[in-house]
Length: 102
Length: 130
Image (cartoon, rainbow over all chains, first blue to last red; front, side, top):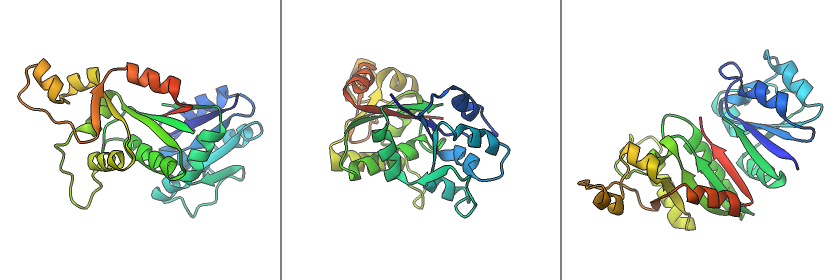
C-alpha cells in the first residue's frame, strides 16, 4: 500500500515537511505544493533532508506553484520531479492512499 | 477513477480552494469522476453568492458554481460549519427564523455523513487546507 503524501507549507514556516519525511514508509511518495515548493529548490537548508528522503521515496513538486513563487528558473534538487496539475491527478490515481500534512 | 475532495479553508485567505479547483479541473479533464466536493470549517465560505471580488481578480465562488453546472458536481457545505458562519439556504432560513438566504448556485447544505460517505465511496479523498 503506497501513500502519496502532500505537503503544502514551507519548512521555514511549519514543521510538516520534516514530520512527514520522518514518518513515511519505503516506497511512499511526497508531493510538494503551494509554499512547500520552495524546498524543491537546490541549495536550501532542507536540501540534505530531501536528498536523504529520496533514497527511499519519490519526490515531486507542483510546477505551477513553483512558478507562481518565481522559482521556475531555479535549479531543482536532482531527485525532485516537477509535475503539473494533470501529473498531480496521475499521482493521486497511482497511489492507493493520499494524505495531506496540514 | 472516482475521486472526492475536501476543502477546509475559505476563499482569498489561503490557497486551498484555488489548489482544489485546479485539481478538480485537471481530474475532470483527464476523464475521472469527481463524486463530491465537501466544504468544511471555513471552507463553507466558498459557497456564498453575495461576494463581489474586484473585476480583475478571480471569482472563486462563481468559478465553483460554473464548474458544478458544467460537470454536475455535488458541492456540499457542512451544516454545522454553515450555522456558525451565517451560510443559510432556504430550508435553514425557515428552520432558524432568518430573514435571508445566501447559498450560491450548485451548492447544497448537508451533514458530515456526506463526507464519511465520500470517504467510503470514492477511490481517493484528497484534502486541501491550511
